[in-house]
Image (tube, rainbow, N blue to C red):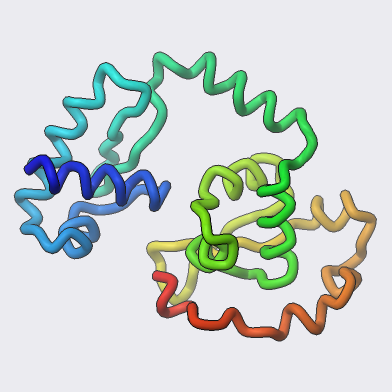
Length: 179
């Protein structure tokens, strides 16, 4: 059970969004009953930690503990008042040139987990997300008009070499492999 709990915790941390017991069972190769039991144990173990396991109907997600809200808010407020980080600029460039794009594809191109950076850009209103029509379990990210206004552009096509980069396929990882 310990290995299953560790696997679930890792998957939820990496995924960054809510997942169903069915999805987790399929990924872990374990029966749904065992996964559900491991989730409950993990939830109980997290009660006195900085993270909690939140159950919302059929889905589960890692989140920050409510008792840490004040310090987490300071971090978020600090990040939002600062200039956009290098990671944020990388993600903005990827979304601008390759969007609409899934989180998995962004992470493939960057080579690192980008959930926190995508969330910060969403909060800033520079990108938006929509349900992926090919896979309702994921989202596609695209630029907002606020992004265009911020850069003084009337269209993404005004970005340098937009047509050249936008047309290039993301090699190795197709949209089907991203889910």
